[in-house]
Length: 240
Image (cartoon, rainbow, N blue to C red; front, side, top):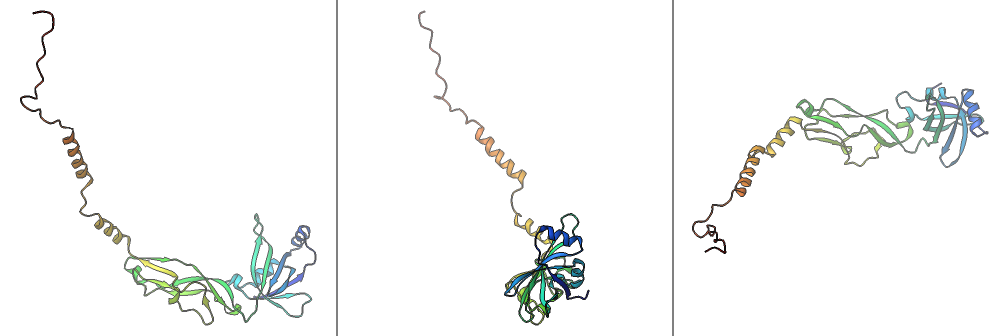
C-alpha cells in the first residue's frame, strides 16, 4: 500500500453483528465525515491503513481515500481510532474530510537541539512543551519543529515568539508562551537559602534564652524585713 493512499468500500449494513463479521473477514468499520457533507460509513483493511500512514507523521498524513464507486478520491486525515482492549488490534477508524488549500490544526513534536550554554555552567534545562499545535494546510504539516537552545544561558527562556517556523506554518499558542527555560544550579539555590537565614540565633541559644526567662519568672522574690514577719501565736484561752 502506497503512503498517502487508502482504499475503502461502502458499508451499507450497520450494527454490532455486522461489525463483528467484518472483523472476522479482516476488515474494520470506519466513517468519513466533515467538509460540509453527510457522513459516509465505509469499511477498510486495518493493515492497509497502517501502511498508508507516514511512519513519522502518523495521523498528520494527508490521505487520498479511494471509495469504490466514487470517481475521485477524497482528501482526508485520520481523526481517531479504536483498539481492542485486550489484543490492541484496530477495530474502528474515523476520517475527517479536509481541503488541501485550507489550514487545519495538527499536533507536532517539539525537538530541542544543541546543548544550552547555561547547562554547561551547571544550570538545568526544562522543556515546558514537548509538542506544539500548529495551523497550516494539510500538505505542509511538518514532521517536527526543531528549536536550537545552544545560546540559552542561565535564567533565559525561549518563547513562541522566538521560534522560526516553516513558511505557511503558525503556532496556535500565544506568542508569550514559554517553551523551555534554563534554571540556576541547585547549589546556588542552597547558598541563597542559607544566606537568607544567616544572622538568626541558633536553635540551642534561643531555647536557652527562653529557659532563662522562664527560670527567673519562677524564682520567688526575697521576703521583706521587719513588719513582713508572721504575727506571734496567741495564748490558748481558759488558763491564766
